[in-house]
Length: 416
Picture 1 (cartoon, helix red, strand yellow):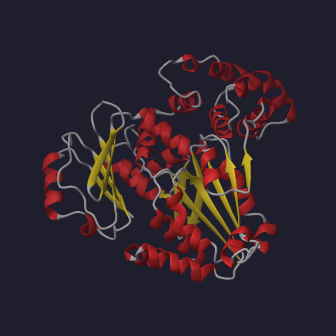
Picture 2 (tube, helix red, strand yellow):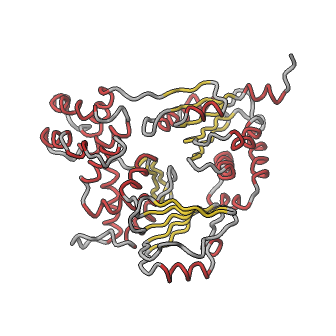
Picture 3 (spheres, one colour):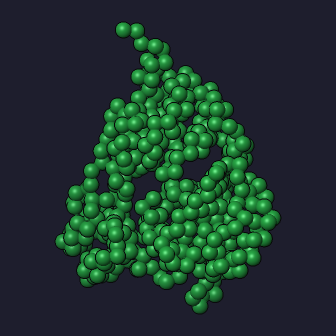
């Protein structure tokens, strides 16, 4: 039997996947592979791109091109008006004849056609190239044609305890760790085998004094709350309620952030200030400094990850599960409005008063001229591939209507 050259090439470029529930460590394992020195030497080029639950082939293609060509932010903006076919051609040119490693992080889509264009472009790489996908769904691994799927299972109680110990007692001697171990193992059992939960609980226990403080966490009534529909939210609730009241407000605002996308810490602090979340105590410190103290307080509780440093700018991300938790806390206060061709849909996070609006705008479209239930709206965050400046996405009429409707508006943020 004769095999076509394109078919042979696709067989030589393997797809592998890491699957497991949220918070189990799929991205962490993929990062260990991606950053391994042997891996760096084995592949001519490496690219990491975040896919997310809302699949956008153009966005994924642009992210791959940016990673392959090392484009700066300004060059990245120029890709916004480039059609998909041209983007796929650029990927072909960039990887042609090269042995590459491509990591597709957090893939959700189960539609074969979503990857048709990208798959065709990926075949231009050299034999031995690899695609590594992380996903929560077994069907995704099958659809992507994974030759090898690694299932991450829940960690043992002992391993969860070791994570808690390393975070909460990292400066303590062995004797102290042994004293805390009996209660620590009982707390570790409540982690449900998730490393993210163990790390978060460790961040909480770090600030508890003595074994009695740990036992108070173990015996908290929050473990028995019926309103908490996900067991993994209970440890996050414990850490949340342990925060000072002003810092809690700052944390819930992080529901505005995009999943697995770095945000500029100084920008977020300015948003906190605009909403009056910073400086609620009687401290006379400058608001920017106080806001950074709030950020460091959240960092100490292990709410952030993926720190980036450069040009005096600090950026980081929040884990998907932590983002879901922030949405859970603010149910009814946030609405996601998706503007796409022929359809504008909204998702209300509960049934309370709308305070914050997240608008996701499809390429070539604009900010809606009317927002429902906007009377008590405090902030608007617009995301879109075509946002270069305010005028590119929001008309004067839409802006006037927004300010007339939302008299309590404190922040309007445009993000590409």
